[in-house]
Structures are given as structure tokens and as C-alpha cells.
Image (tube, rainbow over all chains, first blue to last red; front, side, top):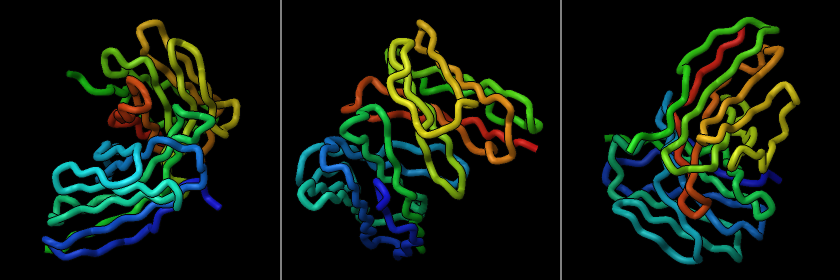
Length: 112
Length: 112
């Protein structure tokens, strides 16, 4: 089992719809969870961080965390073509808090 | 506020050579991490430095090494380059795990 798993996609959504991305992780002790967006040929950009169970909203993005089920999700509301990118879930293991373990990323395509 | 600066942006090296990459973190950030990104393996953790000390190391051979200076700038070195070392090398700095990690633009290394 991989430490951090994501569906590779592509996840194709029409413009204006909600894109839903999921991520599962194996380390029950992990306390911090991050979502990065990476455009083709660019470096990852931090878009959301979440530390407590429940939802956290920032603009059109909502992160959801369920530690008991060991999953974290990202919702993108009112998806725009500019949201087309790869979204990476990153989780620092409990025993190595300053190391990020990344999922393989989910490629999102927003079609006008 | 200046971001994370990586130099050079692009490098072409021959097998067997060595290479040194540089990273200047965001001012005030004392943690610097290095990652390798390839299409096949995704983003993989190389090592992390804090106050000139290596705190974490990933599963890479000893040909990969790094260091951090007193001003938090960091360098990574790859000796005896192999074709498989061709990748995007990313540096990330952080003020602490709860604040997340900011990536530089990366150095794209091609080994021929």
C-alpha cells in the first residue's frame, strides 16, 4: 500500500461544476495535510492546508479531513478552465514531520 | 517578499559528471527540503535541512548529498551522474510544518 494515494485521473469536469478530488493516507499519526496545484512545466503551489477533522473553506476551494477514515479531499467549486492542472496531496509522516510524502497527483481538466 | 529561488533553471550534464544545485529560501525560513520529480516516480523526498543540520533523508543513494549554510541557503550535489538522474529538482522552504512548504521554480537537469 502506498503511503499517499490519489486517483491519477484525468478528472474531466464542465466549466462551472464541482470537481471532487480524494486522497487516502496510511500513517494514522499524520497531523497536517496539504493540497498543491501544479501546472504543466511549473512547480507545485500550496493551495490548502488542513489540520483538524471537518471542512476548511478558502474561496472556491474546500478541504475535507476525516482522520478516522484516513482520507482528505478537495472540492473545487465553480470550476474554471484555469483550474486545469494536477493536484497533489501531501502528508508529512508522524515520525518525520518535516518531510512531505506526495500522492501521485490527480489531473483535472475543466472543459469550457 | 521574495520567494524560493533556485539556480540554475536548466542544466545539461554528461553521464559521470557531478552537479551542484542552489536554493535560497524565503527570508526567515530555516527549513529547506529537496525533492526530485520524474514522470515515473512523481515527487520524492531527498533530504531536509534545518539550521545547517540534516534532519531527514529519503531513500536515495549516497551520490545525492546536500548542505545548508548559516544564512539558510542550501545546495545539493549529485556525483557520478546517471541517465536516470534526469529530473526536475525542487527546493521547498518552510517556517514550520503548520505553515506549509513553498516551492521554488526548480532546476531541470538533463543527463546525456
